[in-house]
Image (cartoon, rainbow, N blue to C red; front, side, top):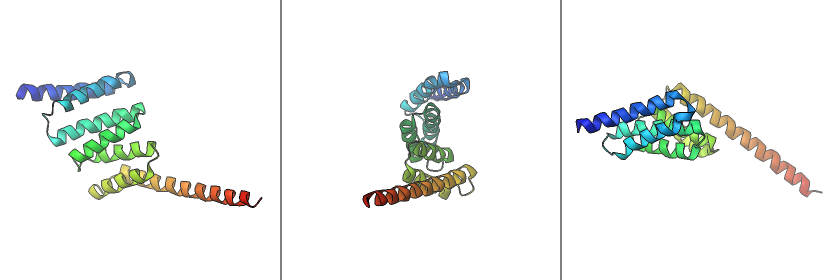
Length: 149
């Protein structure tokens, strides 16, 4: 079992190295994290970190749906991992899923009320929701005015 643990740690570290090497190596990082996850030999907390790392890389690549799925898995495995909430919010915002982004942000802030990044994202979500509501009101008003003619 020790050999297996060493291999899993090595895979995680190698994935982290690939991330530091830049975008060209992101797919290699995802591969390392996925291989470590697929061994099903780590604790939920350790596996959560790997899913969160995958979410980070997928965010960087613009794979927002995959990033959200990975962040959700990380949260499910370890609901007390702040980065997982942050990445779920970022992915949801990128997919324009404001309700989901707000939900993840609220859940994250319940766990980590002093987390400045989540507080910033919460403000950003509410600003975006207000802008959307204003835009919808303007469109509705324009449609009503057009119907009069």
